[in-house]
Image (cartoon, rainbow, N blue to C red; front, side, top):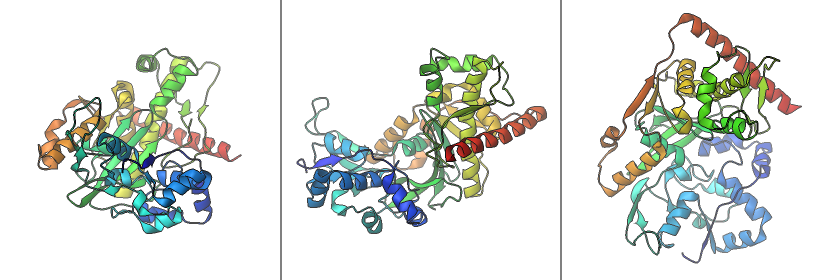
Length: 406
C-alpha cells in the first residue's frame, strides 16, 4: 500500500456539463443524492484520467489510488497501512450510492476503471488503524472516528433527531438537517447526503451550501477596504437602520443551493448617491442571512415540517446582529453554543464513540452547552417590513441570474 499514490485534484466543469447535456442528472441524483457539479470528486477523477495520461495509466494498472481528504490523512497517519473512508465522506464523491456502497453504474458513467482504486467504506466510528512512522506523534495511537466537515458539525451540534438542523457560518454557509433513516430526495435543489454510518446503519441529511458567507465580509475588507477587520462589521452595521431597498447578493463564486447557478456573479442592488459604507456592510451581512433563509425554506418544504430551532456555529456566528437577523428571517429561534468550533467537537465525539468512551449518541448530547438563544421578532411592524425585504431579495437574486444569462 505504501507504494501507491493517493490522488485528489481539482477539475473544471467539462465532465459535469457533458453528463447534464446527456440528460443524466436526474438518474445521478436518484443514485447519489448529488447534483452534477465540479464541486464533487468523481468528475475530478474522470477529468484527470482524460487529461493526464500518467494518472490514467497508474489508475488503470492499480499503481495509484484515489480518496477524499480523510482517506489521504488516514493513509499518511498510519504509514500507508490503512486505506479507508466512511459514508459521510464517500457520499460526496458522486461514486457512492445512497445505500452506502461504491456504485458500479457511477464508476462506468465517469469512466473510472475499478472499484479497487477506491477506499473501503467503514463505519464513521470504527477502528481505522493506529499511528505509525510519524515524527510528531508516537506509534500506536488509535484512530477511531472520521466524519465529513459539515456532518461533523451536525454531530458536534448534537443534531441526532429527525428535523434537527445546524448552519455553519464560515467562508461559506452550510446548512444540514437530519432526516433520520430516510434519504429524502430534495425537490428544491438541495443535496441528499449521508450524515454518518454507525453499526451498519446509515443516518441521512439534507444539505444546502452557500458558497459565500463570511467571505463576503472578507471581500469588503480586502478588496473594497470598507473595514480593517472582519469583526468590525457588527459595530458598523449596528450604526444604521436596514435600508429597505439595498441588497447584496454575494454570488462571488456563483450561487449554490437551491439555485446552483455557477455563472451568477455578486452584485449590490439599490445603491444611491447617499448610500453609506455602514449601509453596505449591513446589506452584506443581510445577504448572508437571506441565503440561509432560502435554504431553510427549501429544507422545511422537502421534509414537510417546520424548523423548531436552528443551531449555529462558525466564525460569523459570533456576529449578534447577523444571528438576530437570521432568527427574524426564518421565524425560528437561533441557538448558538458556547463552543462554536463544532466541526472539531463532532469529530472528537465520534472518536470517543469509536474507542468506547461513549456507547451511543444519546450519551453525547451533554457535550453541547448553549451560549445564547436568539428569538425571532414578534413586533408586527417589523414583521411587515421583513416581508417586503424578503420580496426584494427574491427580485435581487432574479436580477443576478438574469444578468448571468446575457
